[in-house]
Length: 89
Image (cartoon, rainbow, N blue to C red; front, side, top):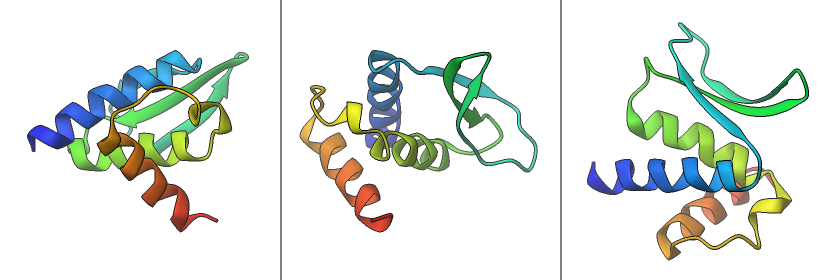
């Protein structure tokens, strides 16, 4: 759980660094994910999901964004991003 919470916080910061606004809101049955609202890029995370599920949502959004590659990140986050990105290629 500690790794998950740490990775979630690091992923949130990385998303912010590349220009996303990360919002955590109760979304009911919606999973969340990236979107654009009024020209602002956002990643919506469902507060009703656990940290592991929210982490997966943000990882999928970041793995699909080429601006993330050159950004500094921990080895663990880089490994998780590569694993998620590999599923969608």
